[in-house]
Length: 127
Image 1 (cartoon, one colour):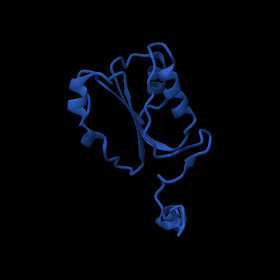
Image 2: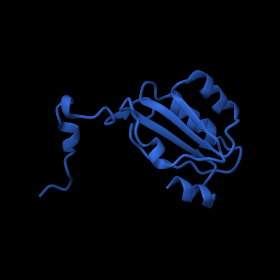
Image 3: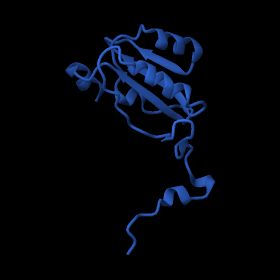
């Protein structure tokens, strides 16, 4: 009996594999990941998000930012540079998961929820 389970999905021929499988080599992480960045104010959380985006070229088809304060320098910069591939939502009207679940182009989307971990209304509305 083996002490591990083979990754059969990774062994499939290329025509059967989704583009979402694989790694972001520059970051040493999987293309599909869930992450939480928790830290106090002014500790560099937004900078870390920018680092993830900047080092993931041609991986994500769209970037969604749901931020309590979307008017931040790095978000404004990304909005200018990624026009057409980024949506920054109004903090008073967060999107529902179903609203961002499907990309018509079929690509992988990157969703950032910034500074809402204690917001009960957002937790209710976004689910």
